[in-house]
Length: 267
Length: 365
Image (cartoon, rainbow over all chains, first blue to last red):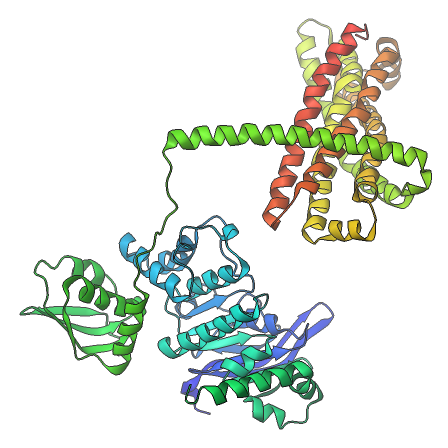
C-alpha cells in the first residue's frame, strides 16, 4: 500500500470510557478518492472512531495520521492546516441555530479566510447551497424552519464550504425517507466524482453501502475486523458480517443494487 | 508546486497561473474586480490546480464579460461546467421589515403571548383544583411514592443551601441594623429587626426564591424533556393522567414543604443574627432569646407560615405549566425553564405585596 495514497491512517487506537473499552488495537486506512463505509452494531464505537480522527476525542493510546500529519497530542493551532482540508457532517446537521442557512455556510469561510469580500462570500455560499441540493428559498431560513432532510443538506453545504478534500459523514441518510435517502446517496456520489473527494461515511443503511461505497470497514469486537469491497467481505467467515449482509434487509439491498446495475449499464 | 493564484493581462487575454484554490486565492478576487478593460479571453493553461472557488472566479468572468476560455484541462473544464449549472441567484438574507412595524409587531406579539400565558395558567390552575378533588374523593389515586420522592428532592436536598443562605442573611441584617441603629444608641433594637423581618418576610420570601430557582426550574426542565421524548404522550395513551402522575406530586410536595422550609429558614436566620449579636455586639444568647420572645408577636409567625403554601402553589404551578408547554426542540426546554423561574419569582413578589396590605388591614402588624 503506497503511503502517498493513504489519507487517514489509524494505528493501535484504544478508546475507553471508564471500565468500558470501546476500541482496542484498532487499525484503519482510508485511501485517497474512495468512499469508505464504516458499519458496526450499535455501541461498537463508529462515531467514537470518527470523533477520534477529527480530534474531538483523544484516544488513550495509538496514533492517528491525517494527510500524513500526526493528529494526537497536538494543539488546535498546530493542526489548523489539516482541519481546513476536511469537512464534517454531524448526525443531526449540527447547524448553528441562531444563524440562517446562508450564514451557517459562511461561518467556516469567514473563520479561515477573513479576506474574502462580502459579495464573494455570498456567491460562494449560494452555489454551495444549490450544490447540496437545497431548494432556492432555503438560504435565508433558520434551521428551526427546515425539515430533517433539509437540515442534513444544509449541514452538507456547510461541510463543503471550504472545498475539502476529505469529508466525514455521520449517518447521513438516517431519519430520511427512502426517496430522500436515495437522492442523498446520489448527491454524495456525484460530489465525490466532481470534486474528487475522499469520504469517510458511517452508516446503518445497507442501500447506501451497496449504492456508493467503494470499500466497507466493519467494526466489531473493539476493532476493525475486516475492510474490503462487499463481495470480499461476503467471502469472509465472520458471523456478524454474514448476519449483517445475508439478513433479509441485506439481501433486499443487494437485490436492489443488482437491479440498478442491470438497468443502467455503465452508470 | 502550490504557487498562489495570479494572473497577467496580455492584450485582452487574462492569463491565470498557480493554484486556483480557496487556500491560495488570496486577494485575486479584488484584483480581478479592479480590471478596467473588459477581457476578451481567459487562458488557463498555467493553472496547476483548481477547486470550485477558482472555477467560480472564472465562471463569473465568462458570465459577466462573455469571454472565451482557453487551455483548460479536462478537470477544470468539468468543474467549470458543474459550477455553471449551480449558478442561480438566491435570496441570501431574510427580508428586513421597517423598524416601526418590527417594534409594534413585537409589542403586539408580546401582549398576545402574555394574555395566552395568563389564560393558560388559569386553565392549568383549574386542572390542579379538579385533580385535587379527584384525589380527595379517590385517595387510592394519590401517588405516595412520587410525592415522597419530590419531598426528598424539593425539601431534604434543599436544606443545606437554604440553611447557608438564611444564616448569612441573618448575619447581614444584624450587622446592617446595628450599624444604623448605633447612631441613635439603639443597637439593641437590631434584635427586633432580626426577629420580626425574618419571620414575617425574608424567611419565606428568600425560601420561595430559592425553591423557584432550584425546583421550579427543575420541574419545567424535567417535564419539558419528558414532553420532547413523547413520554407524556405515551402516558396518556396508556391511560395514566400526566396531571396526577407528574404535576400533582410536585404541587403537593411544594405546598407542604414551603411552610416547613420557610420556618426552618427563619430559624436559621435568627440563629445567624443571634450569633453575630453575641460575637460583635456583645449581646449574650440568653438575652437575645428572651428579647426575641418579648418583641416578636405570635402573629408574625402566622404571617410567614400562611403565605408560604400559596407561594408553593405558584412555584410548582409555573414550573409544571411551562414544562407542559414545551413543544418542538430542545431549545424550548431552556426557554421554558427560564420562563418558569422568572414567572414564579415575579408572581411570588406580587402576591407578597398583596399579603402585606392584607395583613396590615386585618391588624397583624
